[in-house]
Image (cartoon, rainbow, N blue to C red; front, side, top):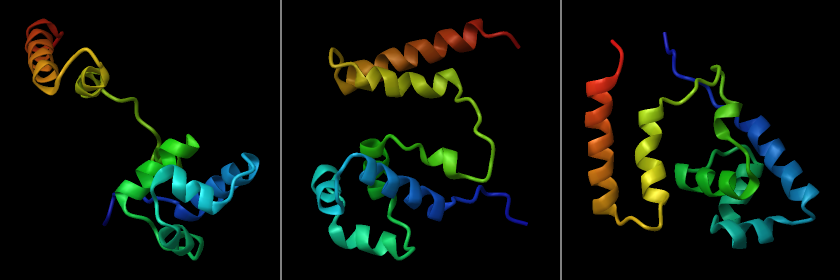
Length: 115
């Protein structure tokens, strides 16, 4: 039995198309804004799923969260799972600094967390 979440691509693509229409855009504009080729967008219109990079770019452009189109309820992310992401978004830190801070936070968390 496969318990992996199922992605409802048809619903995602309909929501994406609605976003394109509501912004008064067209697929060429979407392609230019996201870097996703017009060929990929055309294939998506025919039901083919994009690769992860294209899905990510389209989701960032549209504001759609792919997790909302899965068959499993959305779980709240663990705070420690988000630490590295947030540190890497800080323009005052380079990758080495973000790694160092992340290690410090993880070590402190492991010492202080309730068991």
